[in-house]
Amino acid sequence: MKRTILLLSALFLFSVNTFAQFKLSAEYRPRFEFRDSYKLLPPSFGQTPAYQVSQRTRLNVGFNWNIVKTYLSFQDVRLWGDEAMKKDIAGLGLYEGWAEIKVCDSLFIKAGRQEFIYDNERLFTNSNWSQKGVTHDALLFKYNIKGFSADMALAFNQSRDTTNSTDYNSTLGNYKALGFLWLKYNIKKHFTVQATIIADGYQKVGTTNTTYVRVTNGGIFNYRSKWVNADGRGFYQWGHDVSGMEISAYYANADLTVKPLGWLTLFTGCEYMSGNDATDLTNKKLNAFNTLYGSSHRYNGNIDFFTKPSDTKNTGLIDIYFDLIFTVKKQYILRADLHYFRTQNNYTVSTKVQDPYLGSEADISAKIPIIKDVDVQVGYSAIVGSNTLQLMEGGNKKNFSHWAFVMLTVKPTLFTWEKK
Image (cartoon, one colour):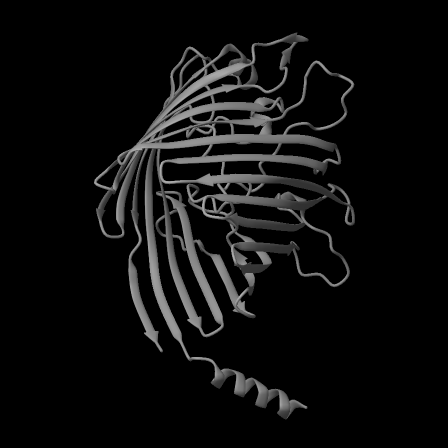
């Protein structure tokens, strides 16, 4: 039997065309930031702005051989000056490490530490703005055929090597288990529909065998043409949060992109996340929608005032935005964004309902290529807060809250090799 298996394996390997490819690349990304009340309103007595430089350094190794594809990405993330000069402090970690096997032309299996990026990255992202990024230790099945794709992922986390328990260290803040199914179908040339169901479980604090599961399901519609793009999304969230509270929350989004000129793009839309009504004292459910493992900096303003439900005291968020994107010589990109924020539901102070208006934000940014694989990005953001935002987060709305950054990205290919 063993000889038969070896013989069949050898025949299979010799029957396929031998192909091998190796690529070694790197990324160097230092970023300077000026922070004057970044993520919160400045205090009434004033404060000294923060200045800092963070850096991400990665070394990437990719190797493809016939039906097998592998990828390793090593990463070091630091703030300039956060370590003593004469101390050896380990800082290198594994960002990605996975292997993908081609079962057939339509089916692939991918196992290991990997990024999950879907749709517009609202629910799953690699969080590229963050110097650390986001990856998942998971098993992923990918099926693709004639315009239809289905991705199914499974993950189960443990905080220690054990022989008789599945207890997970809740202080890490990670999910204990994750599973999702993401379906996508291209209808003719311009239309795409997507559907997803995501279940993530968190261990109840103080227990070893109780896991609360949160489920998010919904659909996405996309229209693409040369001059106009339109997107619509809707999700419903249910189950229980990490504390065991029952969840009933929803999310809606509509985007419209118009390209009247080759160098100008107009982008507008609205994001609607449900929240709790502070005047309803009988409600025992959590109605604040959570965007799971999606991008936070990319949405709701670059100054990051609204990245999680607690930022609006779980009263939800409505963000109406309008963006102008200028492209010069097909490579220089200048962008200007405007945001109007308000709570989705009632927020009260001493039983008095407050004005739902939270504030308005303006963001400007530019991406400037220098040479191949080298670019510079710059940006500036400012927010004008309301009295309601001041009551929610403290600080003083009269003081100016702004933030700026300059980021250099260098992503060279160090070595490539290919053999057929």
